[in-house]
Structures are given as C-alpha cells and as structure tokens.
Image (tube, rainbow, N blue to C red):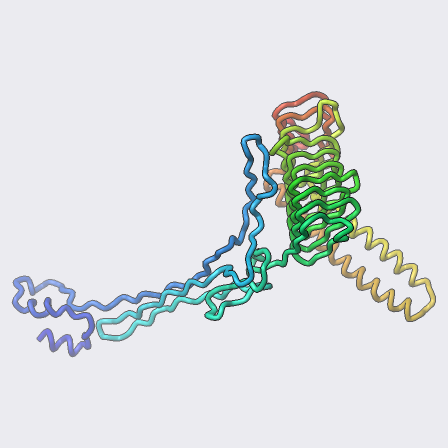
Length: 411
C-alpha cells in the first residue's frame, strides 16, 4: 500500500527504503508522522575573486630609531615590478550543485561569477586569462579601478650639466643630488636620494628627498600629493597632501594637509607655514625669538593655484579686449579664437576650484577645525586662524592652539 501511494504521488527521490520496509510492522506506525523521503538541498556557487600580489592602498609608515630619526631612504611606499611578473590573479568561482525534489525534479542553482581582471596601463592578461602581468618594469599603483604600471626614469648620479633639466611622463628616481638652477618635472612620483639645492621640483604624485632641501631662498618645490624630506631650509614648498620632515628653517610652506615635524629635531624656525589641517611639531620658534608665522585653516595650495588661475584669466581678458580694438586680420581672428577657448577653459576650472574648496572647508569643519600642537613654542611665534592672530609673548609648553568660540585658545 505504501509503495503504491508513493508511486501514485510521484515520490521517487531520496526514499528511506529501510524505514519503508520496517514501517508495516512498527508498533507506533499509527497516528505518527514519518519522514519517508528527503530531497537534496541546492548549493549555490560562490563568486570568484581577485587575489592581489601588490597592495591597492599603500600606508606610509614612519619608523623612528632609538634617537627619534626617520630613515627617508626606506619609506616603503614604492611597489616595484619586473616585466612579466604577476600583479594579481583570479581565484575561480566555486561551481554550484543543483538541488533535487522528492519528485525527482531538479532545483537550479546559481553559478558563481568570474571577476574581470583590473587591467590598466602597461598590464596584460596571461595566456589562460587568470593572471594580470606587467608589460614593462616599473612601479605598480592602483588607480581606483585598475592596476597600472608606471615607467620609472633612473638617474644614476646628479641632475646637473651632464643630464640637463628632467621632464618625464612617469616616475623619476634620482640617485644623487639636484643641482642649483636645474629643474625636475614629472606627472608621477619623484624620489631623490641626495640633496635638492636651489632647484625647481614639480611632482604629480609624491616627492621624497632622502637627504633634504637646501634651497638658498630660490628652491621651488611642488607636489600634488605628499612631501617627505629629511630637512627643509630656505625654500618654498607647495603640497596638496601632507608634509613630513625633521626640520623646517626659514621656509614658505603651502600645505593642504597636515605639516608634521615630530621626528628627529622636530623644529620649525622662522618662515611662514600655511597648513589646512594643522601643524604638529616638537618645537616652534627659537630662543632668539625668530619670527615664525603659522597660518591655520583654508586650503593654501588650492588657494594659491586659484589665485594664479585668476591672474591668468585677467591677463587673457585684457589681451582679448586689446585685440578687439585692432583692425581685422587672419592673425587677429585666430588669436582671438584661441584666447576665447582658453578663457572658457579657465573659467570652468575656476568654477570647479570654488566647488572643491567649499567641500573641503565643510569637511574640515566637520572634523572640528585645525590646530597647532607642539611641546615648546617660543616668543616670536605668531598664530593666525582666519582673520584672528595671536603673538606669543612667553615660552609656552605643551601648546595646543585652536579656534574656540570665535577666539584663538591655547589649551
């Protein structure tokens, strides 16, 4: 009877045949429920994933020795790769297992997906399509969506008359010094193992100067990310990110991040320091009461770029107005067309600058504003936040200056 009912109902998968054989003679066979058949649960597949051999985000670590000194030769923020070396690989998806009902009907499973390789510039897939390989030797970076390999220009010695000025699309590694009067410009990172003299350096990424900058009041340093240097003397520094150094002497600094001078001597003496996110140092000023100006808040790097852009726009407007008064000629028409295009692009950039500056200001306010912290501050130090200024008249220990209730407070 039981066999007949099961066949009539179509139950044919997962039958417990031993239970079925013994059930007719079981003493508790009446008024009880027995599980006579069990289907097979579906097991969905698992998506594959990317296993990285290089970090997507490189954290900068400043390891100090027993004397509080940072080794700027080994900041470990550069990830080098050789041609043909794998950057990442695909871990295949785990296949699913279809389920089965007691009526012997299949329950479909979801199969795991195979991810796409994050292929960027100077990379390619391996023959089996499972690994991402470097097409050339260079430096690995993750751009947000893909891995890219940047070319690296190696300068074995100094940048001087033997090399001339350096202009390169990629990263530059200089194993010597950068001499006075020379320039290094690149859209990537710049690493200098020696000293920067009265030179011009412009990095589209980070700038690392292992032995420091001795600028003779003529060095111009610009970095669109972070700046790391053993020391800085008599130079002008613009950086969109943060600044890390052991010592700053008589420098003009425009920094949209934090100026950190806690390692080594940790001193800021003289000059003007403009920092959007704050200043953190051991000592600010000197016993001889050198005038040391600290400007907190705003966006110094972005503000400087905006002022430069605004000045160019005004020059272009004046030039266009001058051309409009001249008689018609093919040269005049061509020049006016180019000027109008440049003006349009400049005004668009200016609008974008203003939007970004507003967002950055709101973000800084959410973080509780900027501050200056130091172990010792000497007389001659002038602290400015917005339109407010305060001059220190006496030596102050464990200073923490910030804006509270519309006033500069030393906590």
